[in-house]
Length: 235
Image (cartoon, rainbow, N blue to C red; front, side, top):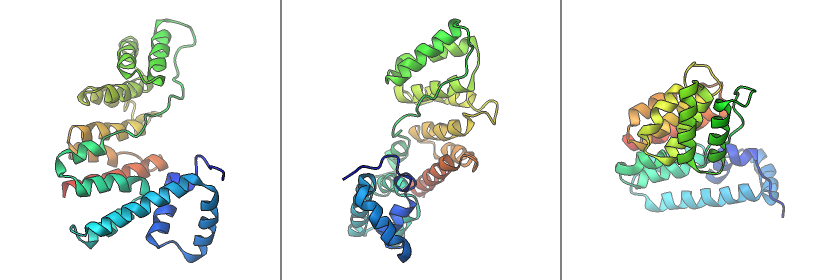
């Protein structure tokens, strides 16, 4: 059996949760089940979704509305919402603020000459790539003292969010929003929301999730699903 990586069905989740919920159009079921024969990623997602649905139905105490609500968001967000439904409110926001992997480093525009700024950024991103977020934060912070950069600020925010405490990431992500339409701004809003969730600040988190523009389609969908989960927690 082959494994399909980067499967669009698994990444989007809508097709999978409609299949598990039994709401997928009949004409689409056969094609998806043929896909399932080869895609172990979707097989795992279907198993997890079915198990979660069964667990929700078995609990029953929170009412039918909540059991149905969980399938109105993408499957990728359903597990986070399940945490919100069945754990006390205290701590639920912090759990929603956890990162499931950090953004990959795709390169930063720095000066072509091997000057001190370039060296600091290169060393900082090398530390980031190997998961040494404390060292990355120190090096990238030093680079920003030499010259402001929304890209460096964004990765500094991620490094600080991973190294902790979450408060230390706020200023870095805010700096990554300037100028407002730079390539890192949408992601900075999303991860600012994550930082505020770590701090238990739902309103601040929602403000930044709502600021993720529709033009960043995939991130906008993730932000919308996360915002739904936050609202459910604070009801």
